Length: 380
Image 1: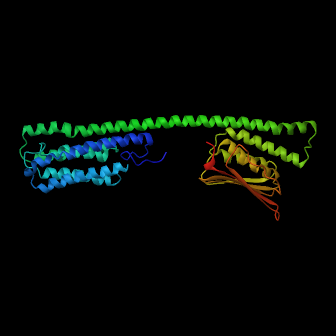
Image 2: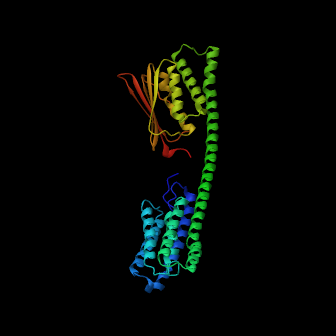
């Protein structure tokens, strides 16, 4: 699953959770927009001294909301600019408090008291809950200090401050708590979906592998059986080089078949190592080299790729080198060795997408063979 840069910056969220969190972000932006556009401060223009501080404070908060709207439409998260927004939002809180006349903090004239908290939710929706708590606490502290410095604090003003905090701080905080819980639920649901899909995928792979094993055993019965019967009844001579080559080929196929169920990082490379080990039992110096990021083709493709190079390994007299190249577009298996001129085996018909090539150098009696499987034509 790709990294996500959407839904309020929920990096790492998978598509289902991402879409859910995107709509949560839209909802928070909508609430913040309604609070901002109510523009209650217009009813108290004559009270502010100086007025430009209130205008600047409102402009800063409105600007943050506009940027959030643009980010949300593009499904882009806040990056490092988030912290610039946090500083500007708290700066707007200070500006608004600084231009309030005495006796008006936490009253209807103090519009920023009920607005800055929602801008904090916009900026910190996808961040740990503690960061929103610290932001709201800083905003609350700014208002409390302004209330204390604005002159004698009446009991009514304190009551206004406390009761007002329940809404202006409590509602954004409750929204942050809900967002945290919903975000966690969305991620857990997505993780459960991925686990279920992984189980289904594993079951499909297991079924295909079991079928491939059955096919391989059936193929061995058709090739190994006659060979063993011929050796048993004497119709085949065990000293005949061709018979020895067929025996080695069948032994290598059985080693590959036994390796089919091994738990290894890459099954194709592991099976090719089994072929090379079988060649070394004939005193042939064989090696396997892999390049690129390994991927595992389907079992029938692995069987075809390995089966194509078996004749070369069976005919090599002293050395052979197997090279596997993994790319996003194809998987290539190549073999070169002192094999002499042989007829390469065709790829298995059950593995579409495989192309083959070979070249014999008569000067040094060296054969090069390649089987290539294009991943974009892989079986579904």
